[in-house]
Image (tube, rainbow, N blue to C red):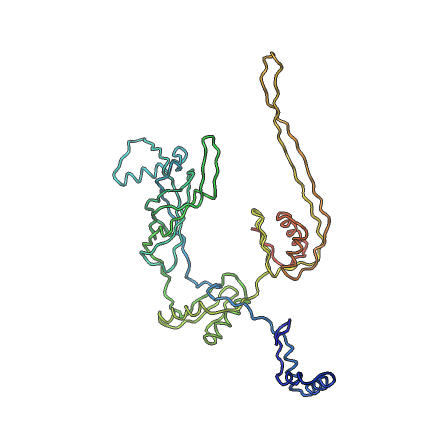
Length: 402
């Protein structure tokens, strides 16, 4: 049977007996059961409320294997085929210089001092991430961003451009049609409308790997796992889960951000062992209570473990309105005057004063949400109040401002 608080285990004999007795007989029957220490222990255990199972995460979602990482690549290139939305070569001289140098490589010599003006070419920077075990011949997605004054990269094609690592070596070659998610339009009078960004594009599979990066072979028989977020409780749970599953003493904690795991010998054995290690379920450790605020967008994210002690809050806001109203002044008839426009400015200050309200002690995220909704606060007002509550020492959690 299950009650509202949790599972309750009942003795079958007691259930059967309870069905045939009632009133005083039922009370006497229960007293007789309680007189037996064994049955009393069973009934006491039946009232225990079992907590829900801990949420488990895959080990691969918590750690990174040391040496297995992405490597950033960067390059410079030209996007051609634009419909008059490329760089204005008078302001971006490097675009025309790059085009002249490219033509010279193909044996095309321009007259000395010539300055080609091409609105269908844009200079761009190219970036990509090279995985550790990517082999030559495989492809990568690349990002293309304008570094000049081009208006849009839509419809353009990136010419073959090398991608280099931080060591200056070429690891990939990028080329292909640029896909742009934004769109823009402009009228003859200068009116312009745009949706999203038109000067940044993507080329899926646009880079071919020419040189791979292979980490050194594991010779010490130890693989180091780096936690993505430093947490001593999570490190302890990782060590315990690995030792319980694969055998004791193969995993040991170094600190709150790294653990060492002994791996079997042989490359194939290590691959098999690491694949099993990645799918291992690990309980979630204690996570810090945080409130993350993005003041630019007004976004506020409150963690489930954040608590607020009782505090009184008073909030007010000031709004300044400036209105410009032009008025036309006509000259008197036959005065040989000219029509003039006079600007009339109106400045108004509106101060909103809010009464003081009490934020009670909260024990859950839903309590905080209910208080915020009942106060009718805007995101900007809530950001200021949360900062003030943190300074007052009434918030149990870390305030992170992005």
